[in-house]
Image 1 (cartoon, rainbow, N blue to C red):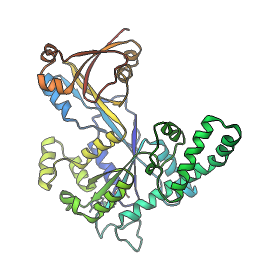
Image 2 (tube, rainbow, N blue to C red):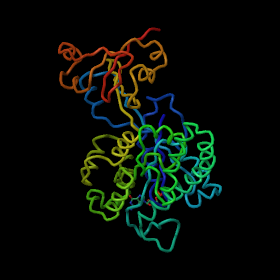
Image 3 (cartoon, protein in one colour):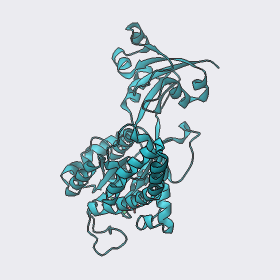
Image 4 (cartoon, rainbow, N blue to C red):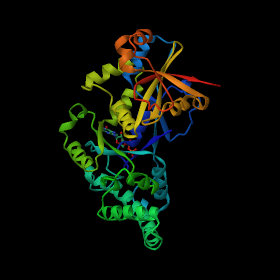
Length: 371
Ligand code: GDP
């Protein structure tokens, strides 16, 4: 499964957030084959459409789809110099599909910035820079390692792939040298697969999480720190989610949805920051949801946007993909509008889709297959 790695300097609220994630965690009974790794927190993806389908179909059971966050251990500073734990930090980031970068945006004189540093004022820009710089330096090292070799190959053999890669390295190198992430570069469609093969850290999609004080979370857009983080994120075409990790920890401890709703209303929030974060991370990774809807079970499934029907069927079971015949498909909007499968069918809104069909977010599918 795709995963988003949580990174940040010490004392910014990562553990608090990760704790909220594991507390809120997905109901294990529904996902018996999930891997158990203490650094991975699995959450259910909130989706109002799943609630609506459940209301219409009244199944015995409803199962949301899940999303995984990985807590990235290790120290940050000096990581690119290859010092012990720092190395591990970079290696762990290399393995995740997206980065959730937690930035401290709360004042609290009881919480030191970075292990008792004397100048313990809050400075989100400096914090972001510290982490990004380590990633940029690590990328620069990877790029430099390839640069000379690929240049030679491109010049002497005129090999098409080498020429294309060299052009890209020439684009990336000066940007990194300027202290900017490679994601600030706009690559063409042809370049993207080559960029991907470089396995750089600063081309991974990133989401900045501004961790604000519980007292200010309801009016967070007026916080100076948040404005700074937003302005910076814009330069990288990255998104920002504002949360108060402490609030999320408290919400995660509540049992029922009603209690959660009451708590949120009391502090002036419409939606929990963690729910927003889950949805944004899902979006960042280019994921979509399709549903299966039977009387026994209504269930949400995660797919990568662009996947065709057989591949999506394979997410449920490999047999479904191998023996795929067609998929009876209805859009969520149509089911919502007509109120039942039969009514939608009478209105001609149930489609039979074949092997080439590109599954859309919100599709409700029933796969036909040979065994
Ligand atoms: P980590 O080192 O990044 O994992 O940071 P922690 O999650 O351990 O948080 C460091 C300190 O900041 C702890 O004392 C937390 O209770 C505190 N903290 C985290 N989030 C918030 C928040 O939203 N508001 C306030 N006031 N304190 C927070």
